[in-house]
Length: 366
Image (tube, rainbow, N blue to C red; front, side):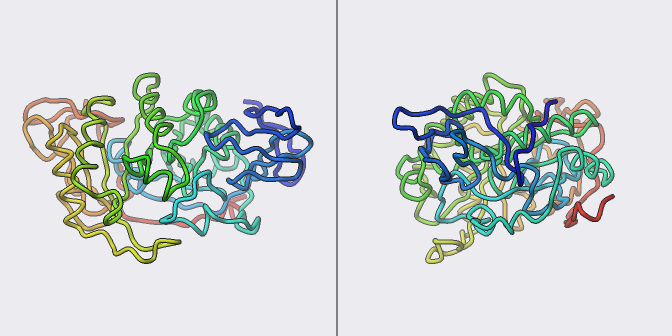
């Protein structure tokens, strides 16, 4: 791995940009295609025009680290029960009015990036803490692509896997490079209408669908999908029918879908919390349409959080929140009752991290 030379204060050169005829520079990492003059930043805030090129201004800086259960990402079929070292930076390339991590993703203060973190130190600390993977989360790793790739490469060198928690809003060329280094991803499919993406997120639906299709057809990355259901915005039966049918037709029945509860936040304080029944209804629609693994999230729902055999209905993995309460898979990942395979990255034994959350300051690790 070749770590880019630091220019100054966590600033490194990037690859995906080009100069326009009028002298501005266009960033080509995501479909937003920000066109910026010298000294200006893109909407994501961390990619800027310095010296006639797009640079990343947050390399080696984090807004915080925490050891979480992998199920919190959420990933239910990727090394279940194991701890993951989670971290993010600052900024975002979407403008979701309902952002649940707005203090990080909407940050315009460099003070948010409080913890210095080289790729080597992240990998070392993750191994010291017994983590099986490192997750790029809290804000979207697409905007700190160079940093995330370097971290993933160093982690792979010591046997630690890399996980992207992302909205999937990126262009084709950087998408190929980025996912070459990812082992798993949770992609946030925010809705299934262009209206929602444009009006509420300031983006477009099709690039996200393109990312999902790319992951399925062109990579070996294990991925799952999450949709935060917002009352009267993206929770209608019609939209859920269309979304889940599209997933089965284009991605197949084995891609897990998570339907999670919204709470009022950022610029959507006028909306109520998502009723638990809405999540259960979405799960029923998904299962009816052929999604084999549909889950509910952000609510206490043991049935909606557990994994069942698609063929015989037997419980394979019982979950109470993030705690694994039952494990009935065979050593090779099959149902013990009918021998149908349970897809995912599974091992003979599950992890025992449970519901713990461990904040980490890298500065305290020598």
